[in-house]
Length: 342
Image 1: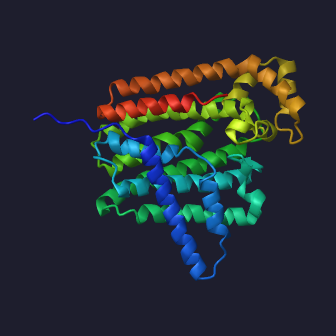
Image 2: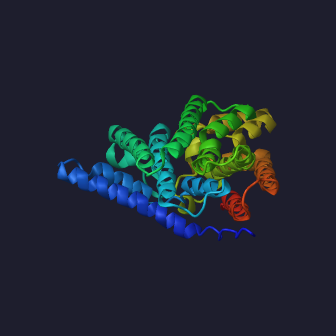
Image 3: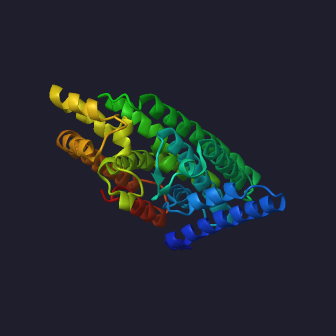
């Protein structure tokens, strides 16, 4: 008997289902809060943050991991588990904006600008706790939940250490490309692509060859995603990205773009970059000088690194033990992640 291939994943429909889970969850939280006469600020702030934008990348990768692991359809409990990743992502970003003292996110004032730093810390904590609640109340069987938790634990450790490494190096630009790549791997790559995919595969109780195949695809793609994000942080149009293109320069973020530039720069170029990058008073004129130097010294190499990693991810799919529809969807997502406009 010939097996029938599963239909292609309707990504728009899955995103709509993820959004519905998040809306319903927050609606219930707001209703319960009203009954207890608790402040509405918390649920309103989290809802405003979640629905101001975002592509639901992490929950979509969770669903793709489920599909790659042989999961049938997209059951409601898998959507709820996937939605927990978006709630966790909200917590990370709310706290990250506090650390970076960011003014905007998704073309809106950051939570700490709107509510104050202390309130934003607590609101981010609520989102973190609620991500757990979504996962544990998703309706997963005991064995599926047991398979999921180690992936979640590792993901949270990795992003926490990535944030801390980023904090330690911000404002201290160096030519250490390896250190900049380490930050990418911990802060972004694992928790954006690899762990969400592995979470979906774990929920599907996939065979032992699926997780390494997912990693072979996810690691280079996650790196490419952050390298592209670093370009957007310097060259992006704020009207399109929803965030400043001065902030990374003002904060002195230790990016691969900057590390490569410092490695290639002569003494005069290095002195100018070190003087300008990390200056909290950096204006558009100074930023334009930085962009000129970075374009001359390192932008082309970073773009090449993005292409190389995209190709590596695509090649990994050539030998992956995934259903054809999962391979097709993963190829599409690889394209989408590395073609965001600078």
